[in-house]
Image (cartoon, helix red, strand yellow):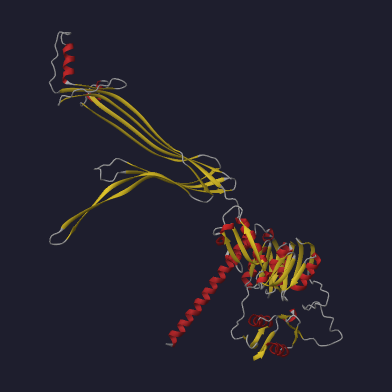
Amino acid sequence: MRIYYRAICIVIILASIVNNIFADQKEFKDIEKELRGLSDSVPALSQTIDITVTNIPVQEFLRGVANNSGLNLNVDTSVSGTIVNNFTGVKTVDILLFLCREYGLSVRVIGNIITIYKPYVAPPEIDKVVWNDTTQRVSLDFRQEKLTDVVRLITAHTGKNVAVASDIETKSINYYVRNAPLAHAMQSMAFANGLQYKLADNGFTLLSKKIKKSRNSRNRNSNSGGYDEHQQYKPRGKVNITDINNIELSLVNEPFMPLIREICDNLGISYVFQEPIDKKINFFGRKVSLYDFLTSVTEGTPYTYLNNNGVLVFGQKIKTELFKNSIIKMTHRSVDSLSMAIPRALKSGCEIKELVEYNSLLVSGPEPRVKQITEFVKELDKTIPVILIEVIIVDVKKNYTIETGIRAGTGKNPTPTSQTIFPGVDYTLSTKSINNIVDKFNGVFSTSIGKVSSNFYMSIKALENNGVLKIRSTPKLSTLNGRKAVLTSGEKKYYKEERNQYYGTQNPQLSSSYEWKPLDAELKLTILPIVSEGEEITLSIEVEQSEFTAREFDGAAPPGSITRKFVSSIRVKNEEMVLLGGIEKLSKTDSSTGIPLLARIPIIKWLFSSRTKQKTNDKLNVFIKPVILN
């Protein structure tokens, strides 16, 4: 039993490993597809560079790649590790893909800014923090937990804001307390881990590094990573501000709040921080707008910003007061089902409603995400061409028949009722008529011709018949680009279907019933137009024509039918007519009867034979002319 249990566990573990491998491969393929697709619009990704490094941080390496290629790159503080490599003649996109594969990194793209980050894995929250909202007491249990994770858990459970100095955010915390007031628990946790605790007037709990008192306690090292709000801030990296749409930045582990203050003060923009934002910035970019920069560095973090009548408000995404409500009005297309076309990743964290009566979308969420959705929807809101399709269907039937010869015989005496001489000869002589002709010839010559018997007759025929039947249909269809247009025209006939069924076993009784069933013969035309650039139109066409023939049996039998169908896909220019193809049916008949041998001798054969020639040509042509109306 134990062996069986262990086998099941091993299978589950192996399945989990395989599933994770396939998931990682799929994620990497998505990153590769996105970066290579971006190479056409961002030439820096295709730039070939040479770079050699030895044991330097990955962040510094990415900074060198950005400087050499001219790529706008934002490196998140979550990226860590060192690299040793020698790259010669390698494209920038291949270097980024290599780093993503080797260090488990991912990318986000906003405009021409690429953000490199390590996907966040939430720390376990089970039994780490237990908060009683009624008694306002807390229980904490942390063992070698990162301080930023500790603060995040305490804030999430208690709703009390805690700010951490940037130089201690990676400090490990060991602390346990049970059912204590929050202020006492925080104060004792800070004391136990060598930190300084302070309760601010606005209700924030401030944690910082405990500093020994000395004469130079106020002269802090600007390169230590800390930030004193009473000290004048000077960026460690490169910050060159021309205007709001032209900012050049080269930053490594730069604190977020003082940097934003510096940029906004330089541009004369008002700003508000609803809470301290503990975040470091790694960013490299040239000619970047302020809002693209802010969107890039806040994407994938708990923070966002809102432009409230020219005042930038920074805070957490979960706060609805930072949400922006925007109505996007459609100009050219319907809003119906439009929200389904917006990618799921783009809709994350936003609420979208379709206002069908106003033909608009109501979008509510963080301003950067609302702006991205608005730009995406505007790309979809394009004029949809209306296409008029002129169709000419020509069905031509030609008949040609010639009958010549003389027929004579005995039988029932035929009395001529009609005799045709012009335009063709169709003459039948009865016994009386033939004897009258014989009487006229007797006496003219020295010999006499005997009369024919009473049942003798003769028929002389020389006819030629030409017939042309031309049926022309000119339907016109209008439809939107990418939508099918269907035309159906036809007739319906009925036939009788009888059913006979016996009931009973010893004395079976016959029961009869019948039903009139319909048959359709119609012309059906289906066209799907797709307009491309250059006013070229791709048409997917299906034409089916069926018609009834004469009933071969009694009137209750179903009629026969003939069906002609073809399917085609072609590309034509606007207002260009094209012949899709003709369905042609050609039949010939040549028959003759006559006296053997004599019927083959030239000239004489016309007196001793009868001949019939028939030729039938049936052709269906379909002409298509699409016209773009707007």
